[in-house]
Length: 570
Ligand SMILES: Nc1ncnc2c1ncn2[C@@H]1O[C@H](COP(=O)(O)OP(=O)(O)OP(=O)(O)O)[C@@H](O)[C@H]1O
Image (tube, rainbow, N blue to C red; front, side, top):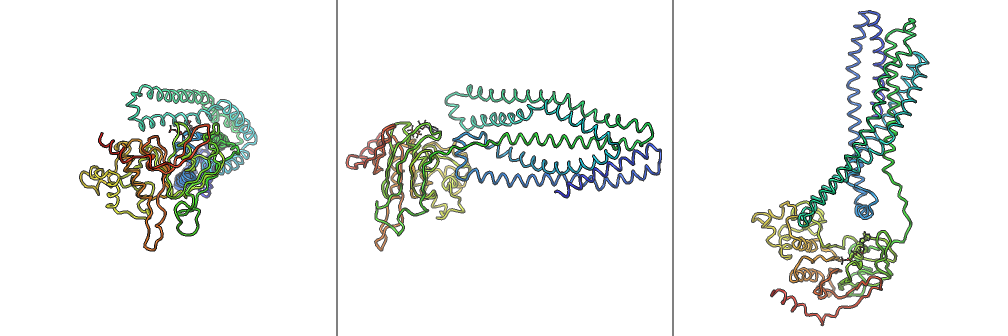
């Protein structure tokens, strides 16, 4: 690329000399010389034109290559340590989608152009300054004065352009995002008949885009009043400066045309350098050196995959904690409010925990802290490794893809360790009472149904999505399942069936040699229904400002079987 840049500059210098000879021959009415130079000109064109074309093509190829690399790297950083979640919660960076799509693209092509422009303009500047100086030193002084005047004036007239261009990008992104949001929440908005309000918000975003564009084009107009006159004068100024020497017979016509060309080149180079630096300031405006205050964070200790604190083989039940919280103080991410104070507890293998408390008491927040999403606070949490923990939220996420992809999520078919055949997946659907879903989606053929791609979040009821999420647990076989009101859309019979599945996975079996099988499944739930008590062994009550209390659930007082029977008779 650097080689092509040098060649590209030599083409410009070469043409400036051929151009001079061309005009000299014409003004001297020397026909032989004219045709000779014309042939040279055509020869130079054959070499020069491909070089200029290749220079541009190669520059763009390099820019694409760099964009690909940088986007992949950005995406990698975006998913690492759940940065995408922290950005959404913290709102420190607006429109990350636009930044990844657009800003990376313009950053790479801009940086490359900046680098190459600086190289080529410096070469251009030196060579054409020498040409100009050799023609007439006063010309050189004239150009410096003219360029300085032009730069100061354009900088003054265009000082708002950088800000306006930056705002334009943000406003366009906000406008687009409000439309995407409407589309994604179409059903809820339709039920609320909220289209007037949505339309108003979108209209406001559009007005903001239009207003900014109006200001932008007005500023550009003012700048162009000046720059167009300035550019026109470039043609006249060098001619005016050297004309007395031409009239005195000291120089020929070709030298005048060469000086106009050189003058143009130098002025262009100077303004390019200034322009590029101005654009550079646009990018630096986007980089916000946010100072991070050093504050206390919850220490999250993840045990290595497949183990608990026990180092040797299998243990007797309840001897080692699966999860332990130590003097945990949990705050909201902005650290303005402490939600849970001084919570110390241990949950052992085989014990399932139910977290209860008023709305807003911090139940979901505690789960977020256990997942490692919220870290503001003090104390420590010890829990199994990420791959051993599975989270069931109230509204499951449906990925883009087939029914099979929904079941396997987040593991991919190829990387799925315990490979499951299509028949195994159909059995799992059967277990979560979704047996007919596959044949329904495949027009009677369940295997075809497994591979059918639909917009699942809009095609399944919330209860079906929640049962599908329980199917995912059967596929992924984690050691700890965190259930955040994930049965809220199910009736009590279906809820009991889902919890029975979890309990079955939690049961350990005695092997032939008398040892226990590998660790089973445990779960922590958040919920409001009394029926949930039957499936749990301990209850953690969050009481707002008071200290949280933990107690064992007495099974004898529960008659769930009976309750469920009564409900199913309804
Ligand atoms: N990103 C946030 N920043 C600051 N405060 C938050 C944030 N998210 C939630 N909160 C607040 O934290 C408190 C606890 O929220 P949480 O979702 O844990 O409640 P909950 O006990 O699960 O309630 P519910 O039973 O209604 O689901 C609430 O008062 C909520 O307003």
